[in-house]
Length: 250
Image (cartoon, rainbow, N blue to C red; front, top):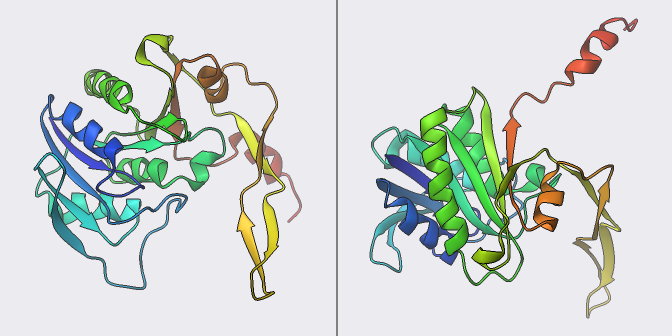
Protein backbone atom coordinates (compact mmCIF):
# COMPACT_ATOMS: atom_id res chain seq x y z
CA UNK A 1 0.00 0.00 0.00
CA UNK A 2 1.02 3.62 -0.55
CA UNK A 3 0.07 6.41 1.85
CA UNK A 4 0.18 10.18 1.60
CA UNK A 5 0.68 11.39 5.18
CA UNK A 6 0.05 14.93 6.38
CA UNK A 7 -1.05 16.92 9.43
CA UNK A 8 -1.71 20.49 10.58
CA UNK A 9 0.92 20.71 13.32
CA UNK A 10 4.09 20.59 11.25
CA UNK A 11 6.34 18.09 9.55
CA UNK A 12 8.58 17.44 12.57
CA UNK A 13 5.90 16.63 15.15
CA UNK A 14 6.03 13.36 17.12
CA UNK A 15 2.46 12.45 16.15
CA UNK A 16 3.30 12.44 12.44
CA UNK A 17 6.49 10.47 13.03
CA UNK A 18 4.69 7.81 15.11
CA UNK A 19 2.02 7.46 12.45
CA UNK A 20 4.59 7.28 9.65
CA UNK A 21 6.54 4.53 11.39
CA UNK A 22 3.45 2.38 12.00
CA UNK A 23 2.00 2.85 8.51
CA UNK A 24 5.38 1.90 7.06
CA UNK A 25 4.62 -1.66 8.21
CA UNK A 26 1.89 -1.73 5.54
CA UNK A 27 3.81 -0.12 2.70
CA UNK A 28 5.37 3.08 1.44
CA UNK A 29 4.58 6.32 3.28
CA UNK A 30 5.07 9.77 1.72
CA UNK A 31 4.95 12.54 4.37
CA UNK A 32 4.01 15.98 3.02
CA UNK A 33 3.13 18.42 5.79
CA UNK A 34 3.30 22.11 6.72
CA UNK A 35 6.64 23.57 7.75
CA UNK A 36 5.03 25.12 10.85
CA UNK A 37 1.84 24.73 12.93
CA UNK A 38 -1.31 25.30 10.90
CA UNK A 39 -3.96 24.40 13.46
CA UNK A 40 -7.49 25.75 12.91
CA UNK A 41 -6.79 26.71 9.29
CA UNK A 42 -9.85 24.75 8.22
CA UNK A 43 -10.15 23.85 4.56
CA UNK A 44 -8.19 26.85 3.34
CA UNK A 45 -5.96 26.78 0.28
CA UNK A 46 -3.23 29.19 -0.81
CA UNK A 47 -4.05 31.39 -3.80
CA UNK A 48 -2.08 34.61 -3.27
CA UNK A 49 1.52 33.50 -2.82
CA UNK A 50 3.81 30.84 -4.27
CA UNK A 51 3.63 27.38 -2.74
CA UNK A 52 6.93 25.72 -1.93
CA UNK A 53 7.86 22.18 -0.94
CA UNK A 54 11.29 21.58 0.56
CA UNK A 55 12.81 18.09 1.04
CA UNK A 56 13.51 17.45 4.73
CA UNK A 57 14.71 14.56 6.87
CA UNK A 58 12.60 13.26 9.74
CA UNK A 59 14.01 12.28 13.12
CA UNK A 60 14.26 8.63 12.05
CA UNK A 61 16.34 9.55 8.99
CA UNK A 62 13.54 9.10 6.45
CA UNK A 63 12.65 11.58 3.73
CA UNK A 64 9.68 13.95 3.67
CA UNK A 65 8.53 17.30 2.26
CA UNK A 66 7.78 20.46 4.22
CA UNK A 67 5.51 23.06 2.61
CA UNK A 68 4.73 26.68 3.38
CA UNK A 69 1.10 25.91 2.57
CA UNK A 70 -1.90 24.67 4.52
CA UNK A 71 -2.73 21.01 5.20
CA UNK A 72 -5.09 21.02 2.20
CA UNK A 73 -2.31 22.50 0.07
CA UNK A 74 -0.03 19.68 1.18
CA UNK A 75 -2.51 17.08 -0.04
CA UNK A 76 -2.79 18.80 -3.41
CA UNK A 77 0.99 19.13 -3.71
CA UNK A 78 1.54 15.51 -2.78
CA UNK A 79 -1.09 14.05 -5.07
CA UNK A 80 -0.44 16.35 -8.01
CA UNK A 81 3.34 16.33 -8.12
CA UNK A 82 5.57 15.37 -5.22
CA UNK A 83 5.06 11.66 -4.62
CA UNK A 84 4.89 10.64 -8.28
CA UNK A 85 2.04 8.15 -7.87
CA UNK A 86 -1.55 7.91 -6.73
CA UNK A 87 -1.61 6.69 -3.13
CA UNK A 88 -4.06 4.13 -1.85
CA UNK A 89 -4.93 6.35 1.09
CA UNK A 90 -4.51 9.82 2.59
CA UNK A 91 -3.99 9.82 6.35
CA UNK A 92 -3.92 13.04 8.36
CA UNK A 93 -2.50 13.20 11.90
CA UNK A 94 -1.84 12.34 14.55
CA UNK A 95 -3.27 15.56 15.93
CA UNK A 96 -2.76 16.34 19.64
CA UNK A 97 -6.11 17.60 20.88
CA UNK A 98 -9.65 16.51 20.07
CA UNK A 99 -11.48 17.12 16.81
CA UNK A 100 -15.04 16.59 18.01
CA UNK A 101 -18.36 18.12 17.05
CA UNK A 102 -18.04 21.48 15.29
CA UNK A 103 -14.25 21.28 15.61
CA UNK A 104 -14.41 19.52 12.24
CA UNK A 105 -15.19 22.79 10.45
CA UNK A 106 -12.07 24.49 11.84
CA UNK A 107 -9.58 21.64 11.90
CA UNK A 108 -6.73 21.60 9.42
CA UNK A 109 -6.20 17.92 10.26
CA UNK A 110 -9.74 17.01 9.29
CA UNK A 111 -9.71 19.28 6.24
CA UNK A 112 -6.67 17.49 4.85
CA UNK A 113 -8.69 14.24 4.87
CA UNK A 114 -11.53 16.15 3.25
CA UNK A 115 -9.21 17.33 0.47
CA UNK A 116 -7.99 13.80 -0.12
CA UNK A 117 -11.61 12.68 -0.46
CA UNK A 118 -12.39 15.47 -2.92
CA UNK A 119 -9.43 14.29 -5.01
CA UNK A 120 -10.75 10.74 -5.06
CA UNK A 121 -8.50 9.02 -2.50
CA UNK A 122 -9.87 7.17 0.57
CA UNK A 123 -8.94 9.29 3.57
CA UNK A 124 -9.16 9.55 7.32
CA UNK A 125 -8.05 11.99 10.01
CA UNK A 126 -6.91 10.84 13.44
CA UNK A 127 -6.49 12.80 16.68
CA UNK A 128 -5.74 12.07 20.31
CA UNK A 129 -8.32 13.82 22.48
CA UNK A 130 -5.91 15.41 24.96
CA UNK A 131 -3.78 18.53 24.89
CA UNK A 132 -0.69 17.10 26.63
CA UNK A 133 -0.04 13.98 24.59
CA UNK A 134 3.19 12.12 25.29
CA UNK A 135 2.44 8.73 23.70
CA UNK A 136 1.07 8.57 20.16
CA UNK A 137 1.77 4.85 19.75
CA UNK A 138 -1.74 3.56 20.64
CA UNK A 139 -3.36 5.91 18.12
CA UNK A 140 -0.75 5.02 15.49
CA UNK A 141 -1.35 1.30 15.97
CA UNK A 142 -5.09 1.82 15.69
CA UNK A 143 -4.54 3.79 12.47
CA UNK A 144 -2.91 0.70 10.97
CA UNK A 145 -5.93 -1.42 11.88
CA UNK A 146 -8.26 1.16 10.42
CA UNK A 147 -6.22 1.49 7.22
CA UNK A 148 -6.50 -2.27 6.72
CA UNK A 149 -10.27 -2.11 7.27
CA UNK A 150 -10.70 0.81 4.84
CA UNK A 151 -8.66 -1.05 2.21
CA UNK A 152 -10.75 -4.19 2.68
CA UNK A 153 -14.22 -2.62 2.81
CA UNK A 154 -13.77 0.69 0.94
CA UNK A 155 -15.46 4.01 1.71
CA UNK A 156 -18.51 5.38 -0.13
CA UNK A 157 -17.93 8.28 -2.54
CA UNK A 158 -17.39 11.67 -0.90
CA UNK A 159 -17.02 10.10 2.54
CA UNK A 160 -14.06 10.17 4.90
CA UNK A 161 -13.51 9.15 8.52
CA UNK A 162 -12.79 11.35 11.50
CA UNK A 163 -11.15 9.40 14.33
CA UNK A 164 -10.56 10.47 17.93
CA UNK A 165 -8.57 8.33 20.36
CA UNK A 166 -8.94 8.91 24.11
CA UNK A 167 -5.84 10.27 25.82
CA UNK A 168 -5.45 7.35 28.22
CA UNK A 169 -3.11 4.39 28.54
CA UNK A 170 -3.65 1.80 25.81
CA UNK A 171 -4.98 -0.78 28.28
CA UNK A 172 -7.66 1.69 29.39
CA UNK A 173 -9.12 2.14 25.88
CA UNK A 174 -12.47 0.34 25.79
CA UNK A 175 -12.58 -0.51 22.10
CA UNK A 176 -13.89 1.56 19.22
CA UNK A 177 -17.38 2.72 18.30
CA UNK A 178 -18.97 4.22 15.21
CA UNK A 179 -20.36 7.61 16.15
CA UNK A 180 -22.18 10.66 14.90
CA UNK A 181 -20.93 14.21 15.22
CA UNK A 182 -21.91 15.93 18.46
CA UNK A 183 -23.19 19.49 18.68
CA UNK A 184 -20.93 21.76 20.68
CA UNK A 185 -20.08 25.46 20.62
CA UNK A 186 -17.74 27.92 22.29
CA UNK A 187 -19.23 30.21 24.96
CA UNK A 188 -17.61 33.58 25.55
CA UNK A 189 -15.64 33.11 22.41
CA UNK A 190 -14.18 36.58 21.90
CA UNK A 191 -12.13 38.09 24.71
CA UNK A 192 -11.05 41.72 24.50
CA UNK A 193 -7.73 42.60 26.17
CA UNK A 194 -5.45 45.59 26.54
CA UNK A 195 -1.79 45.36 25.57
CA UNK A 196 1.05 47.11 27.52
CA UNK A 197 0.67 50.18 25.28
CA UNK A 198 -3.01 50.54 26.08
CA UNK A 199 -4.18 49.25 22.68
CA UNK A 200 -7.10 46.85 22.39
CA UNK A 201 -6.66 43.39 20.96
CA UNK A 202 -8.75 40.24 20.85
CA UNK A 203 -8.16 36.60 21.73
CA UNK A 204 -10.31 33.80 20.36
CA UNK A 205 -11.16 30.89 22.62
CA UNK A 206 -13.95 30.29 25.08
CA UNK A 207 -15.50 27.45 27.04
CA UNK A 208 -16.83 24.44 25.14
CA UNK A 209 -20.48 23.61 25.72
CA UNK A 210 -22.24 20.50 24.41
CA UNK A 211 -25.73 20.87 22.95
CA UNK A 212 -28.41 18.20 22.69
CA UNK A 213 -28.10 14.53 23.47
CA UNK A 214 -24.62 13.05 23.49
CA UNK A 215 -25.91 9.52 22.93
CA UNK A 216 -24.06 7.89 20.08
CA UNK A 217 -21.75 10.87 19.53
CA UNK A 218 -18.01 11.30 19.24
CA UNK A 219 -17.99 13.26 22.51
CA UNK A 220 -19.73 10.45 24.40
CA UNK A 221 -17.28 7.89 23.02
CA UNK A 222 -14.29 9.86 24.29
CA UNK A 223 -15.96 10.35 27.68
CA UNK A 224 -16.28 6.57 27.90
CA UNK A 225 -12.63 5.99 26.89
CA UNK A 226 -13.65 4.58 23.52
CA UNK A 227 -12.14 5.38 20.14
CA UNK A 228 -14.63 7.39 18.09
CA UNK A 229 -14.94 6.78 14.34
CA UNK A 230 -17.28 9.19 12.57
CA UNK A 231 -18.08 8.83 8.87
CA UNK A 232 -18.30 12.33 7.39
CA UNK A 233 -19.96 13.15 4.07
CA UNK A 234 -19.01 16.10 1.90
CA UNK A 235 -22.59 16.89 0.84
CA UNK A 236 -23.65 19.73 3.16
CA UNK A 237 -27.13 20.04 1.64
CA UNK A 238 -29.99 20.05 4.16
CA UNK A 239 -32.00 17.45 2.26
CA UNK A 240 -34.90 17.33 4.73
CA UNK A 241 -35.51 21.04 4.19
CA UNK A 242 -34.93 20.98 0.45
CA UNK A 243 -38.47 20.10 -0.66
CA UNK A 244 -40.06 22.43 1.91
CA UNK A 245 -37.99 25.35 0.66
CA UNK A 246 -39.06 24.71 -2.94
CA UNK A 247 -42.57 25.78 -1.87
CA UNK A 248 -41.37 29.21 -0.80
CA UNK A 249 -42.53 32.10 -2.95
CA UNK A 250 -39.11 33.52 -3.81
